[in-house]
Amino acid sequence: MDRKNILLIGFMGTGKSTVSAKLKKMLDMKEVDTDALIVSREGMSISDIFATKGEEAFRNMETALLGELKEEKNLIVSCGGGMALRDANAAIMKEAGTVVWLTAKPETILERVKNDDSRPLLRGNKNVEFIADLLNKRSPKYEAASDIAVATDGRPVREICEEIIEKLDK
Image (tube, rainbow, N blue to C red; front, top):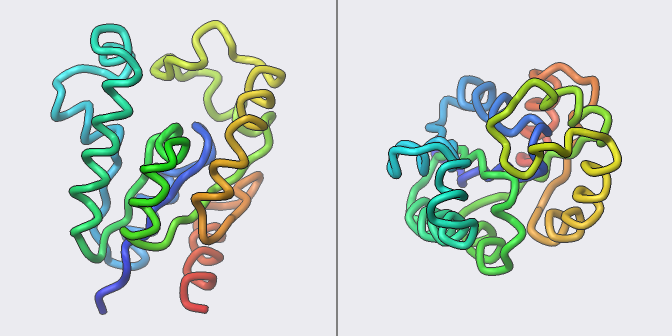
């Protein structure tokens, strides 16, 4: 059965990549991780893209990629944490499929990302206060861009995926 695309959005560390991989298996859909695809196309890490080309260039790459992906069907898209912050991206996402906002508390996010040095925004800022502040600033954008919200704190991946599928089928 052909499904509409499912786009996973949310703050870093909310489980987008993990949930995407599990949903792919459960729904027998294709999967795209936008950050991984941009890294592969550019031949450099996101940190290096930020450093050499700037955040604006990276955000433009995200918008262009979304434009491509909206033409696809039966796709699970794990979106970079900042992708839904641009209004133009949010509009494209809505056209492309159902947008699922994965949420988590700042403490959960810190626990999940504390050993990950590939996140430019968290360099020197791995603490609950910084994460909570950034999360508060971004949450209205995530909420506006999403069709469905699902909390991921302390839950097995399968349970999160089952809730997403249940909400999609309504």
